[in-house]
Image 1 (tube, rainbow, N blue to C red):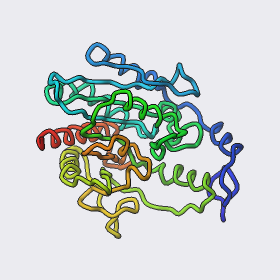
Image 2 (image 1 turned 180 degrees about the vertical axis):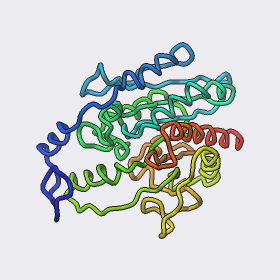
Image 3 (image 1 turned 135 degrees about the horizontal axis):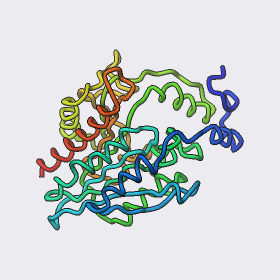
Length: 304
């Protein structure tokens, strides 16, 4: 097997030494405190902002934070919004924060909201998909998980003890998925790297076992007013999965340990923005995430 990644021996899974080399190659590139915690501090007078855990790599630097927006209606359903499960996916984090700042209050008459805007704060600072132990938090929402980020959110939901009606998990698909993260996964696992393609545009990932096509379609329609929707490739697929309707594919959320499967909610989606498109800007990507959340929540409420 030819070398395609600078760490490890091609064809051999990483051991502790290789994982330590990978960890030591990471560096802080932005501030979780300045870009996330400061924005949450500004919301503290309006909503219930609280800490539900911390990352053991630096518990003071990396508190795990959530926000609840309690409804005026005692029987209002619950909605969960998550961002930053992959810390490098910027618009998921900033989109969740922007939704809180600009739109969350308008749902108080109809919904209870819980928002965890940055599940992986270390990943946010080093701009990486993995956590410090070379684990992908978005493949780690399983019982007894070793990923502290995933365990933290699961613990939060257990403590809340609420029946979540809708869960929207905000992500990005970036060019670095192909240039860095997929090669890293293959190297870590001792497998060959098979190049793929990055779709140009927004798409959603539904649940194979509970696809909710009308819900997904409403999100695509809402985002389509903000940015372009990813087309299917020549095989009728997006990132190797069959397109079930424009801009929509499905994954086995629970089986694969994905965040979108953590609640068992009736309505779930994973949003995917493409920030490297020549048609996109950081602001457009954030606006697309906000539009997706609003469209998803609105169609669920209209269906009740």
